[in-house]
Image 1: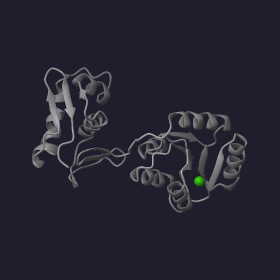
Image 2: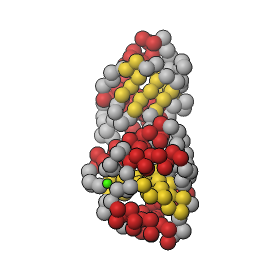
Image 3: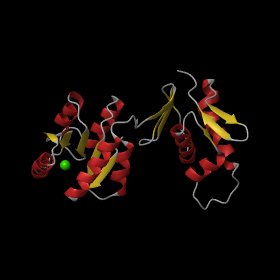
Image 4: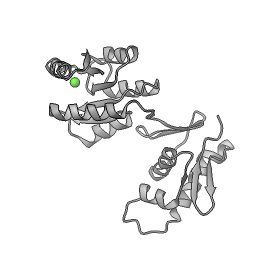
Length: 225
Ligand code: CA
């Protein structure tokens, strides 16, 4: 198994190389983001350990770029600060897992083994259905390249529908995933939001991507290029 370590702290990078080689991994090390991105593109790796704060190109950008280029090598991100935001951003960028520094070497190995078991799967950071596109990290939504402004709640409903694209999703499921668990209002609120989405994303573009499945719920499908 070949692992790429992108880490600018030399001692940590050297420690990871020695430790991982002792475990039988073939290890490539990049000490800055530019080299890291180049190595990730040029050589096949089974897993990538990626620091966030790097000279050259940062870890988020490397991760996004690779996913954009359909490189699905599992990525474990090393987050320096233990802020929730870093971890959210790492996952939104298309990372598979993260570990907060300082970390235990045994935990790192266990996480890497778990990622290797799962292998490389398609998991785009940006959600699409035809020419409808949502980037969960930047909250930017476009239809055919045209940016569409959505409220926070509309975005959440759309994100859920896109994540389940092609499947029938019930109002109850949408309610459970988008609204707080203690929501006690009218479940038909979901209809209202689906109506908003159709008014913003379908009608002005002559599309019908959100179908009502009578008695069951909704299905979002790609409509258009
Ligand atoms: Ca760093």
